[in-house]
Amino acid sequence: MLLWPIFQSKRAALRRKLHFYRIAGSSFGAALGIGAVSYLAMATGWPLLTPSFGATGLIMAVIPDSAFAQPRNVIGGHLFSSITGLLCLQLLGSHWWSYMAAVGLAVLLMQLTRTVHPPAASNPLFILLQPRVEWGFLLMPVLASTVILIGTAWIYHNFIAKRSYPKHWV
Image 1 (tube, one colour):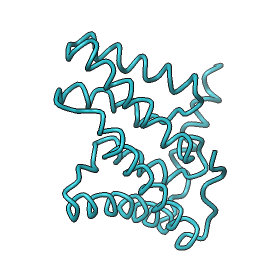
Image 2 (cartoon, rainbow, N blue to C red):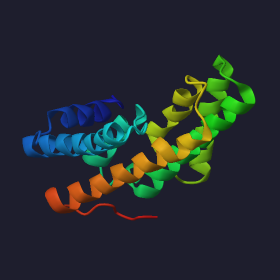
Image 3 (cartoon, helix red, strand yellow):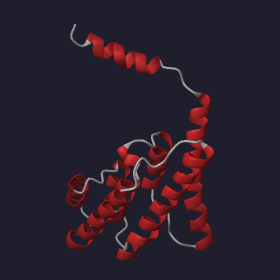
């Protein structure tokens, strides 16, 4: 019987009312951020996309008040995880155990620096799966794309959705 209240609260969460306009708006916000990054990637020929930015767009559009959506966490999480991936690639090479080490170290580094951003934990894997990635990856796509996503989220939330974003910059 101790689990009954937990079970009931989870069922209540599944039955809560869905707000169509909020769902549609946040979906538009996520699409807007990735659209901006994708457009600039195509227009300039710069490699600005990584798979983790799709999840970043979701977090910033759907749960903008979350600590994970704040600029410090978005930029820091992606940068620290990418640095870890690049270091592991150069020092350890691309092996199953270097994937393990890279993700573990990235998670450790994000926690120590208080820049936890869950989608960024996949950056070391993306880097290790492409052995030709170089240090310029930190500027293009990581830094450039995170700044574009933050700028797009700021415009979307403050001017379109009429909500305040971010809660704090640093």
